[in-house]
Image (tube, rainbow, N blue to C red):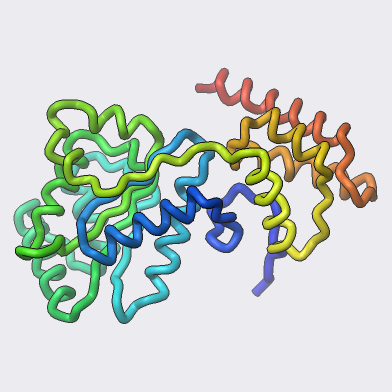
Length: 273
C-alpha cells in the first residue's frame, strides 16, 4: 500500500496536524469534561475555517482508541431527509439493527445504551456540520438526551457547527435543547504569534525546515485575519511555488501570488453560490 507523504499545509482535518492553541486546549478540556462526566451535550461553534472539524476529529480519534471505555460514532454531514433516517444512521454506526418504526428504533437504541452502561462504557456521538440540522433533527437530539439514569446521560453528544446553529438554537422553540448544552466553545481566529507557531508546528510534523520568514508570516496573517484554513491554503500554494523555483525560503512574491489566487477562488465560489 502506497504511503502518502505528510502534506505540511493540508486543510484536511488530520488530528495529527492540529496545532492546539491555548483556546483549542480549553475546548478539548471542556468536551472531555462533559463526556467523561456524562453531562450529555456540548457544542463547538465558530466561523468557517476556524478548526471545528479538526478539533472534533481529534476528540473522536482519541476516544476511538479507548475501546475498553468508550463506544463512538461520527456523523460527518447530517443532511438527512427526516429524523427517522438520522436515527437509523446513528444506530447503524453503533452496529444496532434497523427497525421499521421510530418508536422501535428508539427502544433498540435505549437497550443498547443500557447495555453499555452495565459494562461501564460511555457512548459518544460526534456530529460535524451540525448547522445543517433542521428542527426535527434537533428535536431528535433532545429526545436522545432523555435516555438517562438518575445521575447522568446514557449518550454523550458533541456538535461542531458554524455560527448558524447558534441562531437556530436562539429560537424559542429550541429553548429546551439550548438549556442542555454544557460548556459550549466558540472558536476564534488565531493571533499573529499563534499563526507563526501553527506554521512552524506544521513544518515540524512534516519534517521539513520552516521556509516562512517573519515578513511572509505577517503578510499571510494580515491577508487572512488568522483564519486557520485560509492561512494553510496560502501557505500551501506559496510553498509549492517555492519548491518549483528551487528556493529554500518562501519569497514575498510567492505569498502575494498565493493571496491573489485565493482571492480569485473565493470570488468564483461566491459567484457559483
